[in-house]
Image (cartoon, rainbow, N blue to C red; front, side, top):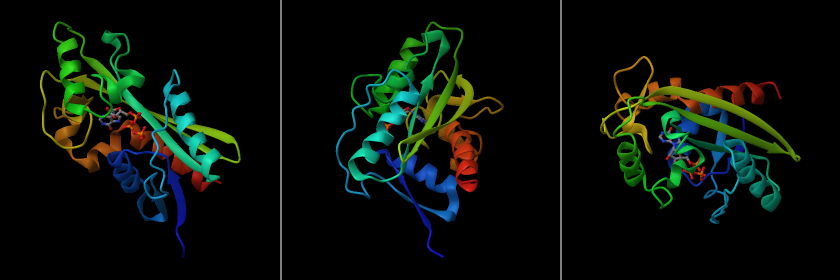
Length: 194
Ligand code: ITT
């Protein structure tokens, strides 16, 4: 049987890998590279939801393809919600994960409250209708990097109930408990019922 194709409007190859692994074999996931879209989509919304919808709408309007996009980030309440929607470019350059972690650790140096959560917001668009699916994963920010697996802030994020960071826990555990795992679970339920 031919697999159902899903276009995932992202340039982030780590997200693609995680989403493919969470979705399993039932779907074929096409990234922006796969559909030959190499433009930078300007994410100028003021929320995760707005930015996810901007990415999905861009692809829908330009290519006429139903697709989904995900906007995610790390929220640290004691830093007034930073880095939040600016997580990918917290230290200035988009996707400079090492510099982003350095800035986060430095800003948390004198803070007792190191609680944080990851947010994942998926926007699915088909025939102009947008559906939103959300997931969160709570934890704390470690004093220094622990492990080197995953991507982004994974080496400094220790999820509730664990002593290890996402950088140490491996993809199977991460996908089970992560923000993306949770938003994808709701997304998959929706796909199954439609
Ligand atoms: P696309 O917009 O192309 O999907 P992106 O990396 O720019 O890719 P976002 O704008 O959604 O994606 O920013 C997400 C950032 O949040 C990401 O670059 C990391 O810094 C952080 N982040 C999100 N999920 C994460 C995760 O599971 N582990 C570690 N960091 C994560």
